[in-house]
Image (cartoon, rainbow, N blue to C red; front, side):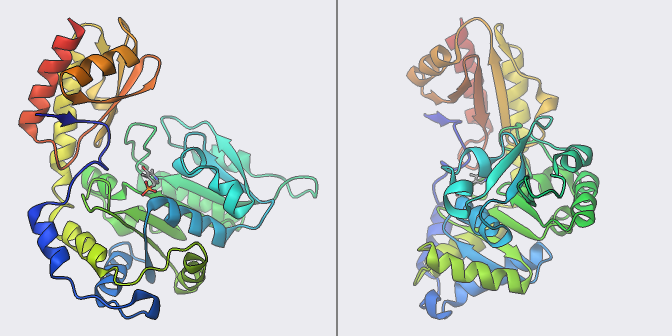
Length: 340
Ligand SMILES: *Cc1c(COP(=O)(O)O)cnc(C)c1O
């Protein structure tokens, strides 16, 4: 049995999800005629408390469409220094929007309102214009860490004082909701735009939804066509998203429990360090002091446990729909064998 802990993107559609895909009503979505896509867009917008939604092929497109709507070339975007839209989207911020990042060093991916405030450029013509703040909830690089509503709202207050829109990269907002018990709409109430992924913990094969005010989505819709993201009978994919929202949202609690179980197990293995309480959702980072992360990853690979190094002495593990509790226990045994 392979235990794949690399990412929550590796899940395969379940038989029931494949059934939902097979039975989906479809139409040409470029003509606005795919009722399944429309249902998904409306449903996600309503869950997140926004006026409208737009189905997009990836989280990257959701984030970059939002950024492109919010900024102009030469503008500056405040973002945490390991933020996905800055670090892992192939330079799209500059390449597509002509904007520059103002990366800020958060605490495990999480910024404070004071940090955001002090990153805003003075209004003098030799500076770039600060035009957008991007937050990520949960923070991927931070180890699945959560922005509380209070923290988000404090940052939103700073944004309002300076007339800056706030974009939320909510690829794993679902995990923040399930782990904190706070409603999705409360978590993003003050964000002007939010992008959520269906293809991470929710287990759909493809797709994200970008939500915001109607006028924002109208502009994002035009740009999606420009980006080559206008899709035809894409209700097949939207159906997987709807199925995931019905059946895979609340079960994220199992992934969180499995992550705690895994982190606790690994913490007991000599040479490994992992503090379970530091990882509130489905992502953890493991420190390896005796051997390099590359060595450990290779030894694990030989034992059919897949986990990628994220630094010379650090490895990332992620729980998801395709690893159950037995697989977690098995992974702990194999980690222990790899270290001995
Ligand atoms: C995965 C991810 C994205 C991008 O999603 P893709 O569908 O892979 O383009 C954006 N933000 C965060 C935090 C992510 O983890």
